[in-house]
Image (cartoon, rainbow, N blue to C red; front, side, top):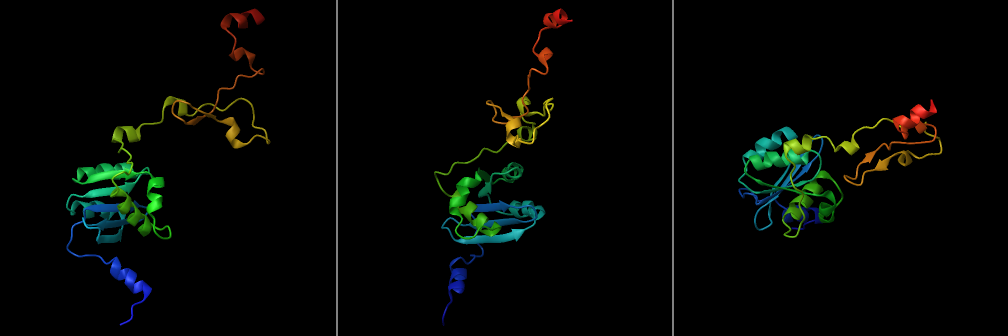
Length: 195
C-alpha cells in the first residue's frame, strides 16, 4: 500500500480517543473557537472547532488540565471562567506564541501553537485580570481631554497633536498654552491689572 504525504500527516497527528488531555490550547476568534489538546505524552486527543457558546459546556466536561489562551481582551474573561471550572488557566502574549506556529497562520494552527507554548517551562505568562480591574477605565491622564483651541493645519500629521503619558504610556490631548490665550497662564491679579 502506498501512502501519500497527506495521509502520513493525518496518521501522525491522529487523535487518540479515550485519553484525557493534560494541556489544552484555545484560539479565540470572533465567531468560532479552536480547541487543541494533548495528553501527557504529547499525543493529540482533542482537535475541534466550535462556537464560543459551546466552549464552556465542553470545558466543564473535561478533567482538570492546563488551558492555554492567547492574551487579548476576551481572554481575561475566559481565563476567569476556566479557573472557575477547576482548570489551570495560563495566558500568553501573542508574540511568545508566534514562534510555535508550524504552518500557515490560521485558527487551527494557532490553537496547536498555543498548546505547544503552554507546555514550555520557561514561557512567560500574563496574569489574569480580575473583573474589577478589567472593567476599570484607564487612568485619569488617558481620559478624553478637550481638543486644543487651535485648528489643525493640513501639514500636521495626526500623531503630532497627541502627547504620551510617562506614567501609564497612554495617549492624551495636551493642554496647549499659546500666546493667543495669555490669560490662561496669568494669575487673577495679573488679569485685573490689565483691565
